[in-house]
Image (cartoon, rainbow, N blue to C red; front, side, top):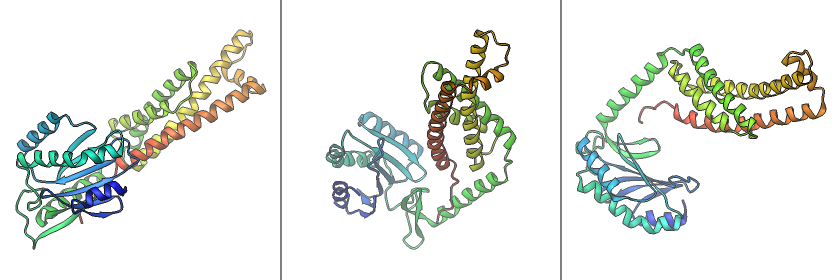
Amino acid sequence: MNKKFLELFTGYGMTITGNNGYGLIKGYETNVVIRMFDNISPVTIHISCYTTSEQKRAIEQAFRAAGIKYFKFAFTDFGVTIGLNDITGIRLIKRMPDLLNQLYSFLSDNGALGAQYCPVCGNELNPDTRKKAMVDGFTFYLDHDCILNLNKGINAENQDFQEAPNNYVNGFVGALLGGIIGAVIAVVLYMIGFVSSISAFVAVLSGVYFYKKFHGKPNMMMIAIVAVTTLACMVGSVFVIYISVAAVAAEEANLALSAIEAFRLLMQDAEFSQFFVSDLGLSLLFSALGIGYQVYALSKAIKRRKAIQ
């Protein structure tokens, strides 16, 4: 953990392990994760607390009314996750004490129950039956019965997912539709002089959307099908462009050749073939970048929840 953040959070009595901190702040069980290379929320704080629906609405209104800069939040099943940022890390550290006082005041003033209570059911935790759990990298105490009930739900969801049909054919049709959309964008961009990864990004996002829309199961096979289909469509877009160019060239030269025949003939020209290979290589490179990034994001997004240990 960054030295300045380390000093800050150890000052609150937190135990620091690597880039993670755990402890009690203002009576609330708190987890902190520092990711200095995260441009959106380098500081993530999870505050465990039990709140009713009405209390959540009141806390949300308080957060929004405060107009805190570089701030985002989301309620979880176990409390609230807060993301913080600033122009520089030093500015964020300077703001942090007042900011934390403000955030914890919003929780306590609106009745959020702290560390003595289970964040799931709101019952007071029994030292003999409570259990420390880790969920999504955050650590907190839960009532033992709540863990059992949560695990029943998680196991049932995972079983339903496993038993659901894969629908690979339908999913492929959706992935192909997304790939075609990306290919059209690639052709349009090429016509105005650009070769970029944007078309691959769009193709993957569209492919995943239609894959699910056509009832394909969102698993690792979905990622593989969408990735391969997108790559094929991106490569295909380059062939479509050059075959079209060849057809136009043959027509202008009054040659009675099909588009494919004209393309084969022009590929014997060193300059034409050099441009083709260069654009094909760029398309493969940018497609790989776009697909790679999206595959990484998707592989995280489709992970199934595991039983709480």
